[in-house]
Length: 190
Image (cartoon, rainbow, N blue to C red; front, side, top):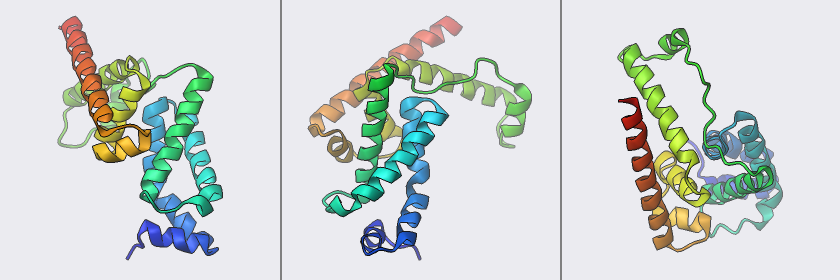
């Protein structure tokens, strides 16, 4: 049976390093995914993920439990991503290779998915990534947290430090721009 995050945090604060390792194992993939979708590059996402857990470990005594541990981690990761983007003055969401290797796609395809469907899905992913790059950081972050990580509007508002209505507006406006961009790119393909 797995322990709740709060129990692991309490044991970590008591000096049990294995409990913090369990938290890392539990949250490493979601934090990496958030960083990757925000920054668009594997190396930077790994760096942000590692720094997130280093900062969390150092700051653990200051964790008051007013928010869920996962929300606290997401906030640390988002702040690190924001800092990185500010420093680098670039905001790609996903870096996709230009050429598509059909043999690689064939190996990666699930048995129920045809090569044509897989190529179409990869092509759509490229268009979505391209359209996401055009969004302001706040809208892109709201979409990533809601659609990819399944956070509630309230959790996103808490993470971004803004009112609930602002999160809903950012998400609505971001999705509107995405639809428009995807429709435009579909018109160019047709």
